[in-house]
Amino acid sequence: MSRVHSLLALIFSIILAQSAGLIGSWATRPNIDTWYRALDKPGFTPPDWVFPVVWPALYLLMAVAAWLVYRNASREQQYWQQQDVSYESMLLGKRPSRKIALGFYGVHLLFNALWSFLFFYWQMPGVALIEILVLLTLILITTRLFHRIRPLAGYLMIPYILWICYATVLNASIWWLNM
Image 1 (tube, rainbow, N blue to C red):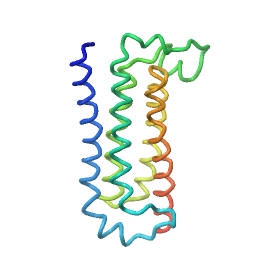
Image 2: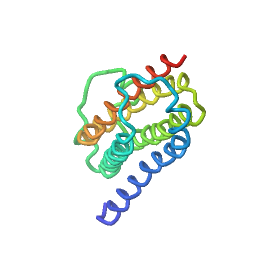
Image 3: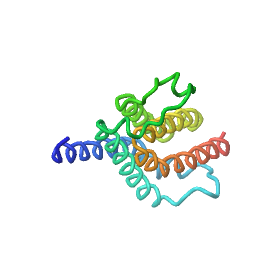
């Protein structure tokens, strides 16, 4: 892969990830000062300024991880460790494919944006809680696949996993407090 192709792939990856964030923020912003402010929230709810700082950084890490997987075509086998039969190998085969990993990544980005619509735009925290559990599962699968192809890509997803775990507990608490 040429340097120009690699750079264009990185730029595309960043734009794609940040676009998911922009779509989610489009659904979120109109309801922050109205519906969301009126909800009962747990004491561990972060201040509003944290979200526009954390999310772009997480989307950047995701984009770099996806880019590393994308450009790793020639080295895919180098990072794969042969194992005996596992549930993962039964589901995904012996070697993880870049296409499968990036496919899960793309689906997870859709679920990422969908959560903002469910929680903020349609104001359904209970349904959003179910959806965020599906999202977390997709992130874990994506991370595992990324790690199997390029370990650094998997490690770059860890802050995102931690944030989504926190967001899941926050979503559950808000739903519980406002039932």
